[in-house]
Image (cartoon, rainbow, N blue to C red):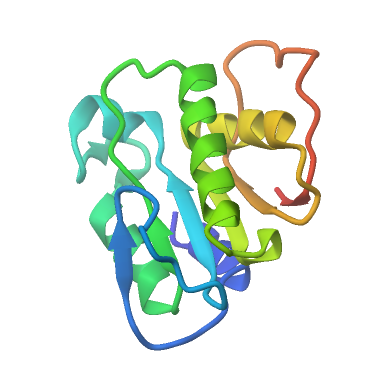
Length: 158
């Protein structure tokens, strides 16, 4: 699981101040990089620090702190159990539009999703249709068929 951190860090510019929010800041700094991190389903069902028998500890707070320690302003909230992916994608699209409306250039926004969060990120990319926004899809492997209407848009690392 540690290897995917390196991929995600590549999308985040280094700096020094750690900032983590659960929603869009009221007065964002346009020059900063904003990472909207979408966690895996295990966090929905088992809390912020679950242990999977095959993959080990998923330390959600540590992931957020690690991203923020690289200089990104991190936006991430723990979703409730059984969150609908399409509905949550709508929330994230709104967050991105709010950042842009408040002066953040689209190229300073990264949506990173792990597992179910990656599935949500795919939906955000398909609905948002802003080619400058960056997406990092980590282990975004569906259990069933991918809806045919989903089309990735933006700079995508998968």
